[in-house]
Image (tube, rainbow over all chains, first blue to last red; front, side, top):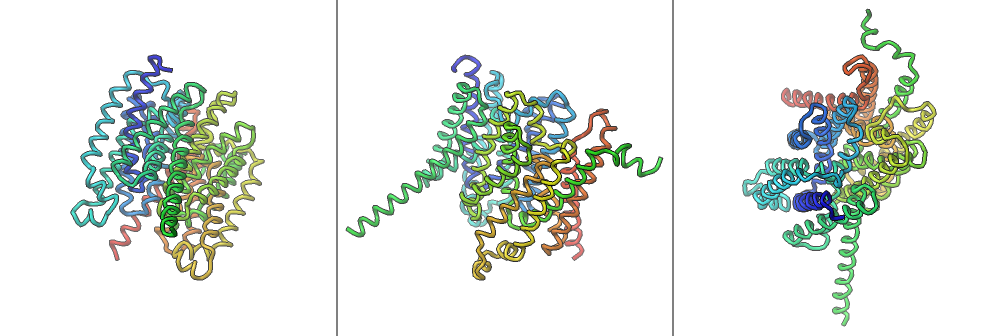
Length: 274
Length: 289
């Protein structure tokens, strides 16, 4: 399980989990779950197109992720935001379907792009993942205050001269960057469940934003590493363990939250009665 | 060479696969147009998109047990709609999260089923067929089921029309008038699940949202009246589907030769184009006003 080719998988997926945990925290806080689903999913077309014209997959993913982010940000100013996100997503996916059908050798790779292929990561994937991951974290650090303010209190942000639209566009840009680096590892459909499940679980466990973000990273790491180990043992796809693991983490955290609230209520009631 | 010959490549009108595609495409476009208007008005595009994607789980599970994809789509979408209702899709706050969690878990399951499909000897093409659809490969035996489900979904919307409209525009007023808002919402979600399953067999699970949201969002830009928007959405969806089928048939004569372009690509591209066009129309109208 810890042989040399597996070490790459552990390392790369660790970087992915950290980025997903941090970026996902703001995704959940801003209620951008749909955008976090649409951008990675649509960027699938970029990978298929890159393979068709013979350029690097990472480049194709990046270009389409940014086109998607820009399209959602700009068209969403005029139309209904969720309808625009849906349409942008399906348009990119349809292009992906076209590229796949034009490129007959590509079909088997569709599955690994959509659902991830963590076990086939080579050692030269580590450096680009690390660099892009660092850029993502740095961007979030630089945007931390305006993001926090415009997510939690949009009116106050506006009053202080923080344009909601510009913050939204910047955040979608970070989401696109995170997509480009994480998709080759966990697949277009699954980075989303990691980005939602882990931070949502963390937010159920604590109200403090800093703690929640750290917790979100820890939970994401736990899910991904568990998924790799389980996938190695069972030969089942890693995506299955990431998807169901994220949902399980969320459900467990929610149960914990509900249980704790009940306990607090009972204690307060008990002290009143006594 | 007449113009008609140029538009409809030889054999278009005699081809049985084309006949089936035209019939199923029409039924599906009408249902998704009617149901989609409320999806857009209620801001449930993400729920529609999620139900479409979740259909992948049903399609791949059906392939595993040797059943038809439509049965899988319908069964899983109805179950998922119930799950989403239970975890709180009716609240505006936090419902994207609820949708997202259900979607993530379902996609994880789909990954497993598709993997088992390919390892247990079923052909490797099933991934692409389920995800991106292939309307030309539907057998005529599916038509009755499609028509029944289509009529059922439209009948539900017609029967629910007034309470649903009020619950959509103003839930408080609807509740004050004694309309069971949550029940109406749940029934609507059921109709949405049926419509999404139908769209999935036409243009694939992950593209089904295009038929659901595109024509409806376009229609709601052109008219404010829900009734008119429903007719317009059904018409626009029908036009996009039929023109898409014609173009896909013609594309066998385009490069790369003897290898058609996917129908789903044309349908989605047309839907996206009319949405952008309607935006331009709306903009021009506002400028004039």
